[in-house]
Length: 239
Image 1 (cartoon, rainbow, N blue to C red):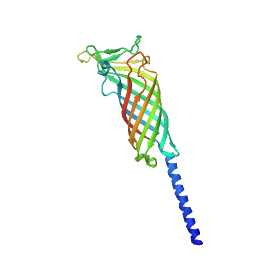
Image 2: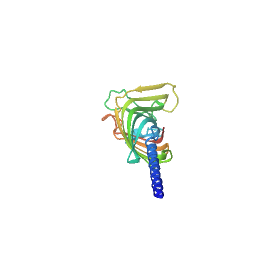
Image 3: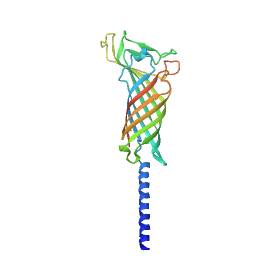
Image 4: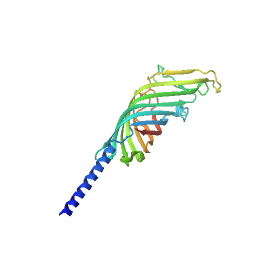
């Protein structure tokens, strides 16, 4: 009888310890870092740009994004989680021998070809959006997410904060420097005031590759060709 009691007691203790360990592991998953801060640097491209514009866009156009996220694992499947947050996304498209007039009173946004005219040595269009990103995430090892492969699909919606062009160092048509002043022009008139983008990430630990593709047009309907922003780059996440 004593042996039976000892066996039952030992089994009960083992079961309780196992359950406690599972609960602890699950609690660790629920309290994991969850990529709450995401910093992104990107290579930026205008998809659908007509050749008259595309040939003037420099390949080193770039952007930077920062988001604060909340990550909520699913209780029934801790590998899966939903995340949402808020942040700012910026993009700078650099042009060669081209300018645009954001203050123009015309219906269409003027893109000026300056191949044979005075132009700025450095010229860009920069935009900044306040965005709300939402992601569905999958972490292969949620208990050790810092050493796990991660996948994420999502969407983000944003509102325009700022749009401006900036030109530096005017040159003549032969590339000779004229002077060294900087010209900046702010206007939201032609740029779409809202943006919706589809997103995807794949990575390991705190680093991942990401892509973001704008679903609606960069510019307001009827003011320019139907061009969309593509960002491809690196994400540093954690905390």
